[in-house]
Amino acid sequence: MTNFDDFKLAVEALSGGRNTVILDDVGMPSVMVALPRYASSELSPALSDRIHPAFIMGGQAQDVVYISKFQNIVQGGRAYSLPLRDPAGCISYDGAIEVCRAKGEGWGLVPASLWSAVALWCKQNGTQPRGNNWFGLDAIHPYEKGIITYREDNRDCRIASGSGPVTWNHDGTPDGIADLYGNVSEWNAGIRLVRGEIQVIPNADAMLSSTDLTEGSSDWKAIKSDGSLAAPGSEGTMKMDYEDGKWKIAKTLQDVVDDARAGLFREMTYNRLELPEGVPQILKELTLFPADTYGYLEDYVYANNDQAERICLRGGNWTSANHAGVFYSAMDARRTRVLPRLGFRSAYYGNRFE
Image (cartoon, rainbow, N blue to C red; front, side, top):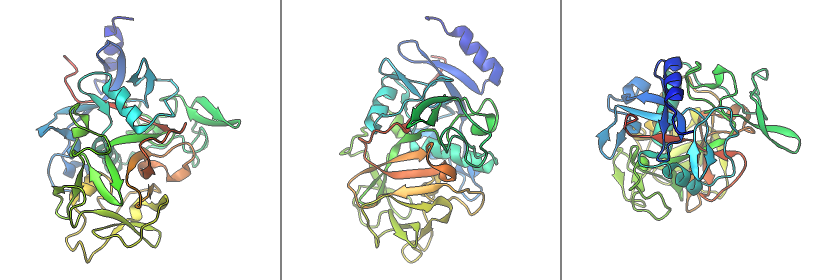
């Protein structure tokens, strides 16, 4: 196929422009969801009125950005968002970055800031999605199922992209982002733990082709208690500590273990003596700490605060049961980890009319 104009027009007409088709540098299509710019205060009234980091790239505010409607497949060394396909599994963090950036300028692995903006939007609008969190179905609503595309040990596992009901979309409509909850856990670009220290790529700068996302890159930044960014290893930066079965934001670590420990996202705490002004807003904007005190479900946070680098996965997978969700984070994975239940989706920050 060389001309996708009819496909694009049909997708846009059926969705009222909320979905579109964007071609990569070899002319192949991906179905994308358009997200207009939001202020953080629109995503939670507890946040101040500034542009959410997901809509800032290279210091410039973005009017609209695009996220894959579907968990991606890999074809010809490039990532694609297409319906009713078996989502890619067994892909590493670096592999996901590579196949997203291979699509051309403007394309990249979904930055953690963008995932977080969508998660906050879902909670604010009362549409936190359900999904394949238990071997092909939703554990709490087992009548909600998808089309099985992958099995292990004679058990249903992965489902075809977008094959679940509309309750599995981020806004509860056919036009929403599919499968953010479960199926395959998704690599996010721009958040990691290093010996318990939270490090980020600022805003949506992970989408810039010039940004170095490798382990030793100087583009990674730590976060100070006032929300400013600093060189990794600086004094007084934000860290993930653990106390009484809960993850805790602190400047100093008291409980360090080389293991993936779990806690409910909604029960996260912070060291009030070290942080008398509370947790900096940037951690709330990146859904590394609850923005407010209501509406969160059973989403888990996993982390290992003793290793040199652990990358962030989001959403949960087909084994996560009711602890999957848009606020689920697993910061216990090496960038080289490869499992059938680990996948990704791409984003596009550019002019779709070019």
